[in-house]
Image 1 (cartoon, helix red, strand yellow):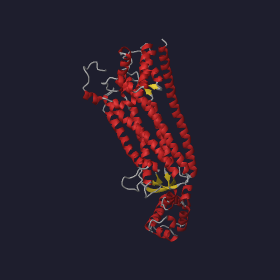
Image 2: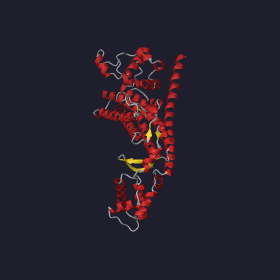
Image 3: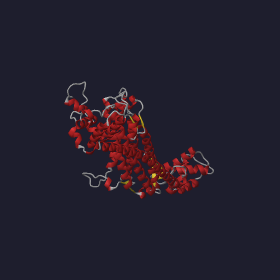
Image 4: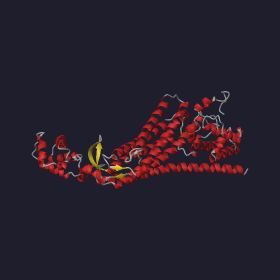
Length: 502
């Protein structure tokens, strides 16, 4: 239909190679929505008559309500959804009427309009799912505010903490991802329509009006920028990867902690897979797939930026290849968040195994070293050496817990570094070791953001408030879109009703 200068039809092989019909199916609704607003703007700008406007709007409504209509009327040689829709409407209304729909518009501003509208809906759903996941983490954290466990660095026991502290750390991280999406929404929710091919139009159109009808907060001012730039896609994809990386790290922790060697957690049977050969197996396949899909999401971002890096200003057909990558990133993130929410909500936590690992751990060493500084007045570096020597001695005895050491053991250990002090004695060190039970270890640490119970409660309250504020922000975005859609629907209905009465 668009072939004015080239003669004849495209070679079928070229058409098949060029076609984006399959990936454009996700844009079908948004293409029709954008066309509705564009047609009404043309009417209100005195470019279309009321009769022409009504006929086109009725045709669009028919395409919206009956999916078979498109295939019935569309040009079989259409390269994309835009040509497919326009060719169908021309057949439904005649060239003299339907052929006017594309006035002051190009596929170049049309496609990026569709992408922006789809992406903002995807982003809002993802944002809602993120808040649901954060609420699941919060609920689980409140259950385990007293569940003591080792915290790890380099996968080695580092300090003692509580399971709630671990879960809350990801609440904060995921909230930052929510905020990133909210910030990027401002740059997604601006309308390119009316930029035409690249340099605007001589027709008397109103870009601001059509942007308002579609719920956009503003327009992409510069017409070259409007049709050329895809920075908002890179930003969305980067934010998506950031979020997937958080899910990937949680997955890795849960996979490790669900092994027989740890046994800290166990996935619910409904979210575990079995082996085809080994009857005893209970595999964390959903978590493993989140890890794998994180790699795919990273690959999509690299592919998108690689496509963009070699393009000149203006639209190039290379941009077509970004759409399936973007759709995949969006759907992967949405389903991965949903899966993680269910896993967190149903995961079984073995508090006894976590506590047993804590009781026998050397992770209280830093606490003892700090107590030694307070009681003995020595430097941290010397205290570090003293306690490190005692830990080494205990490990050479067969990894016995520090609490099992005797006064004689400590005296022997200190002789290895020729340590003597008028205040710090073997008796003092032994008493400090006995005092630093797992419970006291956590209770003694009162710095802001630590595993201390009071800090856990404060963090939970803080996150709950942040979630409420984020939900208000999201609801405000959604309400603006719903209001714009309602007003557009009323305009369409009024025009069609008036057309019936004339």
